[in-house]
Amino acid sequence: MIRSIFLKIILFFSIIIALLVIPLSLFSFRSIEDHMTHILKRDLRKIAVAAIPPSALLSDPGELDREIKILGKKINTRLTVIDTEGFVLADSENDPRLMENHKDRIEIRRALLKGEGFSIRYSDTEKKRMLYTAVPIRTASEEGTARGVIRASLYLEDITALNKELTGHLVGFLSVLILLALLLAFFLSRTLSAPIKAIAGASMAVSRGEFGVKVHLKNNDELKILADNFNYMTHQLSLLFQQARTGEEKIINIIEALDEALFVVDNHRNITLANNSFCNITSCPEPEGKKAEDIIPWPELLAFTDEKHKTKENAVQEISFEEKIWLAAVNHTLSGESIILLHDITPIKRAEKLKRDLVANVSHELRTPLTAIKGFIETLQETARDDQKRYFEIVADHTDRLIHIVRDLSALSSLEKGEKKPEEIVSLDTIIRDVSLLFEKRVRDKSLDFQLSLSEEPLLIKGDSFRLEQMMINLLENALKYTDHGSIEVSLSKENTRAWLTVKDTGIGIPHDKLERIFERFYVVDKSRSRQTGGTGLGLSIVKHIALLHGASVDVRSLEGQGSCFSFGFPLLK
Image (tube, rainbow, N blue to C red):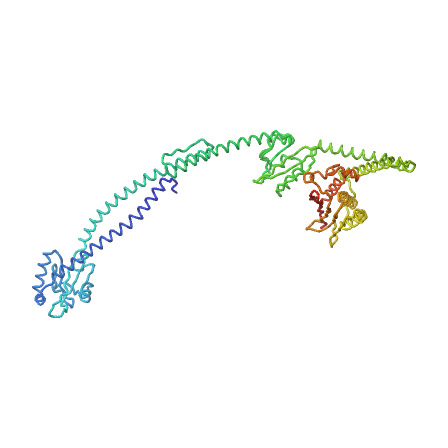
């Protein structure tokens, strides 16, 4: 296979020249030969017409033969006279008595039928190829009746010799033209291939990382534009690679500086990247290129990595190994690799446990004295004077609020610890209907419209009925607390594999910038209203924990001044 563009151009031009010259030459040679044959035919006809013998000689074959021989020598042309029966009467070069009958000769028959005949064929008499032209011999007195045929002929060797001479001159002329065309093709190929070769060499250098190479061309054509664009491209590539190297160095430095352990796994379960923190926890100084299962001795982390790598799902999960608790986060690259980041959250978990234990212990310890205080206040209220009852009522209200806070803290602490009653099959319809009955009177007292919409079929989930009732009570308490006019709507519907519980009100709503914080402990949107109604700021936090405990998704939509809508999607029993 020809790979050089120079040779390709030369070959291309050579093929074009051959396609032009060969047909042209063949056509020229054929045209010259046809033209010469036509001229000779015309001249032979004139000679034959001029050599028609007088009628008197036709009756004297001997004299006719002598005259024809003399005339043939003078004009250097073979002449033959044939009668209408095909017998040769005279011939300028042969004895007519020895010649065969010519009645079947093509030129003779055409001359007798059409007044003129031509033929090129091999002569049995002369043993050579010859050109024949025949015309009839007529007399005016006989009303144009042919009395015979006179034929003039020439040897084709003469035509061939002349044709060869002309062909030789034509071949020489064409050879010069071909040589000039090839020389032009050679210089044109050099002109085209040299810049292309320079650009190709520069591109090879760029592929090796030599971005400083440049191509300089003197000619002002498309190749010059290509060279200038190539130079600009290499300059831009140099800048991009420099930026990429700088960015890569920054990323590597950041990864190495991370306290968190980071490693990358490819589609073949090989570790392609790992930082020092990962090397330290695995006690492997060079994990790159090795199988993940050969480096990571913790089955739970391997299972988490493999599962998320197969599903290509970004996820975060707590994993325990080495007597520590790690937060494992996995993300995926476009090439299919998985990036796993391990963050040691053991101190955070310990702090959370201490906080939960503290809250639980404080709540437990405060429950008894608060109950005692409430009992003594109720006793004192019975014996107090009228001017003292107002103060005792205030103390009793605040004591009730403290008791509510302690109760909610205790419930929240229990939820955070994961403590729950054994799971059972629960009908959400029944729970919602029972809890709604508890709030009918309070809703009527505030002149609100209460709407309850349940599904036609029972929606069963696996859960804790006590916790679900607690969740529903908190939701309705919250809606009733912040709604002064309008309505409260409770609905339960089925969508695919989930049961959606929705509590919607037309209350004061929640500002957009505070939606993310409403599930925090002790966070209240309207503090003045909360103090008036005795809210603890723990109700929605308990609601969210109960929802998550049952695997429900949480969605909140609210517009300030227009109300709020809380939706929870519980997974249905299959």
